[in-house]
Amino acid sequence: MRQRNIKIRFLPFMLMFTYLIFSSCADNPLQPVSSEEEQRIKAELDDRSFRQFDPSKDADKRKAVIIDFFNGVSLWAQYAEGMYALSEWEILSDDYRIEKAGSEYRIYFEAPRSAQILPTECDNCIETTGISISIQNLFDSEKIRFKLNINNDNFPRPFPIFESWTKFNEDEYFD
Image (cartoon, rainbow, N blue to C red; front, side, top):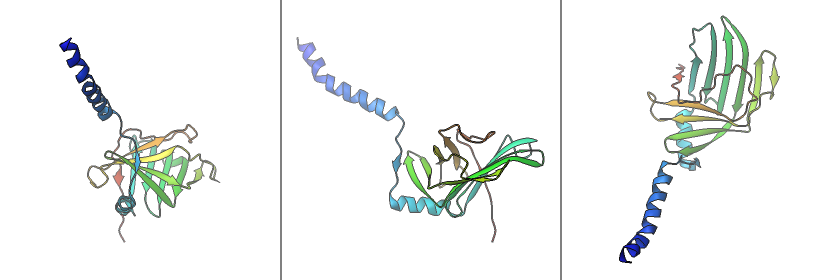
């Protein structure tokens, strides 16, 4: 009888311990950042541009992505073979909102616009819902990584989707 009472007394502690273990292993939910943190993040990204090629910039068939933070945020994509671009488009926004989970910052386009340049020109013909940009190690230029989050299949193909953390090269601009 006494052994059973001990087990019953420790049951709430065991349940709480189990809950803490499982909750610490779960993915951190994204939360909006404070206005002060948003200003600090936007100041860090302002006037910066990052690019990546798949498989490489010198490959005969290559896909490219440029993420830039000049006047808001822009995601530009291109598919090229040899010297010729075959598909090119852009999603841009004058402003963006930011959420954070752990070391990940996620950028969401506010009132996004799109433009397709190739194969035929058109405005707002690229679906912009379900797109966000994740950034890791934001304040360390040597370790900064990006990943694109795309939750719809309406994008022009072929499109380079960097769904795992990828080092993008930062462009250097001189005045």
